Image 1: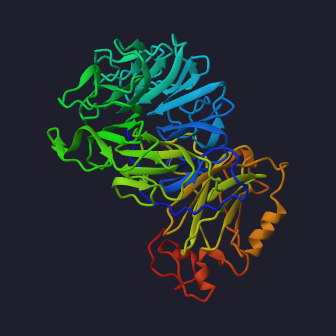
Image 2 (image 1 turned 90 degrees about the vertical axis):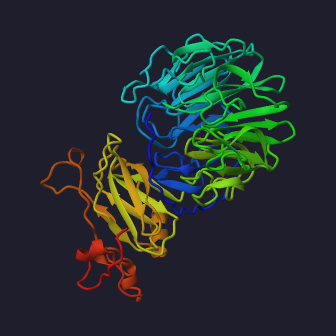
Image 3 (image 1 turned 120 degrees about the vertical axis):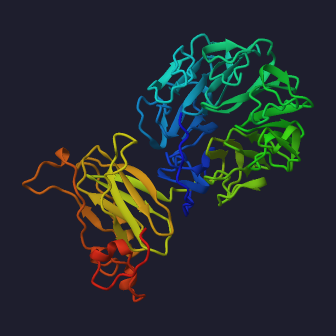
Length: 571
């Protein structure tokens, strides 16, 4: 899987609380949101503060990775959302999902694990199911692309991993998978570039392979990146830890500085209750709440100051487990050079922060534990490659931007704020993620606007609506137009918009009487005059009619009355 470079932009996303209190645990996420990673109903480049996953309740476990999210619910079903380039949402398609949707056919699920763009799910009967990408044999069904990134091999619905009938735990990392069996042994498969399968070889395995000599295992954690290999940790029932795999980033805790393809004890560890492995580092949580970390520390991912240097690059590191300030109840280091941990029912993060994945409102790296903004009552926290999530019993909040379908229409509503005009546009949902164009010409609305409707659309078709301003980065959400016989928009909603003085221009895209039927051609937007006293016709800023003075963007010069626009930069 190719690592995708995502556009950096901090979105000012302000959410409004829902009046009803949460009855059961739900999920909040932060960081990259390019693929609807956060399940908030819309996508953006990033969110540096938590957004609630929409429509989730009764969550027992959450797992994230590859731009996607998964939640095991109390009724034993599995919900999924976000990116779906390799079919990792398990719904038989490769289309993204802005909100959680059930993974069809799965019941009695007790645990889920995700890494890269593939997923493992554990059923109560000990059977394991896999789906998503299969570049390195990570589905465990005997197939593989042998590491070829342009190989079109994926599974869009869950399939059972043959030969696994007594599993009690599943783990994924990079393109490597492992299961713990009822007898305490471990079987693994997938990428094996650095010996991370632990069978003494460096050969890719496309079906479950026993790790000899590893017994009485309580937990396995795998850290890595597809195509780049990784390392693994095993927590034994006696509280000690063994590690194996690459030593490229010192994550195996081997003070000799050498990797190993078979499990080897991590010196000095005892009374461990949880382990976690990231791409460049590892963590061990002790029974007394002490958190120990080791590995590379270029981005501050260890949470403490390093006094050593490692490798030919002589980068900061710790070869042996070293305490992180604070006391913790759980930890997740599976992100890309950052860590999340729970302390006193709050999430603390540290390390790399390129996509706002530390959740502290910024994109600057932080070398010491820092609380995630505005999130409490946390039960579990997880770190994915570029975004993080937490299960919380705090009341959920409504999405700050969403698109709802109506009769041959979609309506966007938002509770965001901007001192400059909003720019909105729409397009038919592209059939392929490679399709970049197709957006309508942007319409500019008053800063006080809070909704916008596109009419004359094709029933049953999905549409994307994009919103942004010069100070608030773009967000995108999906809505599906319904048939004309569907229930009309609530009069109360229309009245409240008018009472608030919001600009709600209607874009009528119905074909002419002599043209083709709406279902046979893609309509083009046609701007209509805005309500009096809000946004002037032809897209000029509200500031002109409110006495503040002319204020238009240069790209709209031709739309505004002569001489009324300034040379402000375009949105």
